[in-house]
Image (cartoon, rainbow, N blue to C red; front, side, top):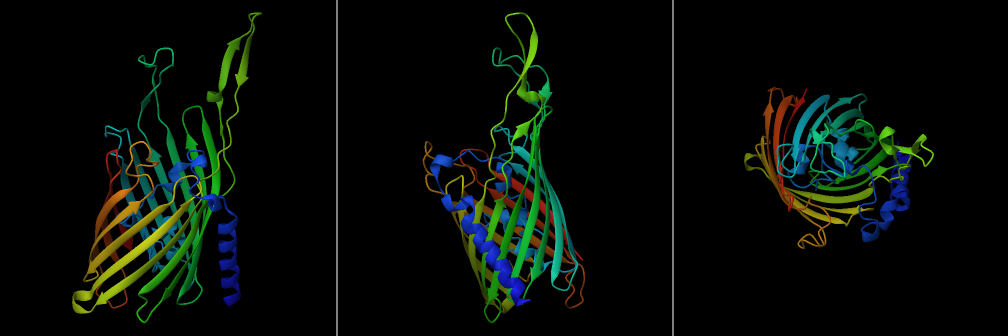
Length: 357
């Protein structure tokens, strides 16, 4: 088992060092990656404090931040989340609506298998031509979908690892692209009461993808009056690889089972500026949680130099409802809500629920 752990750790570290994330924060590469939806966290609980929980994320939602946390699923966990990105389809910023469904099942004493599907829709968009942009000719509906399959394993009581294989598809009525990527992560837990946690994860490592379809062809007429088709080629796009490093510490208070968790994380982006996140979560009676976080990115306070809208303040809350009084039985329902600011766009609201049994 120790040998397997060493191999897994070496693979994650070497992959992280050799990946494009080694050139993270390079402004010359900003905006050149594809499948940017892979950087959007679709899960409600972790977005409540900016995804800072790289080290201490637990359960099904861990498949996005750090797959190692999937190892903490009890028997079976099912979750759903709905996110109104930048105000949703009805927002003034023409945002997207994201629906996410996932399931995690313990298949071995120390192993958990999980899967989730994220679907992003933009509603109906008018078809226009550059000659007459004010005249519409029907509508089209772009859609993004990511299918993720993960496995996590507890090597020891303190060390956990996990990996995700993801299929990415983007499509309109006549143009589409597809690709796949791999995530891998490790979590380390220590302390008398497991209060200190460290995590590292590499996300979206994989081959480039490109678009294809009839939408990239043009019908033309040559000087002789003959019709012919000209097909343009789409440039290849790399996946938005990033490396996440996180640390968290739990301050435990015996009265009313209180816990204050302070967490920090650093995200090294290959095609965006780096992110620095700080957050905290307060838990009462192991049933009620409040959390908040702040995402900092260089240039975020300048209208002319801001790179992304996902920065600033975020907050959320959860209610855990136990469904069994038996000691050690984790059966229950959790309801989550989160809000993320998105300057200068409208904020992102997310609501979700999970069922454990």
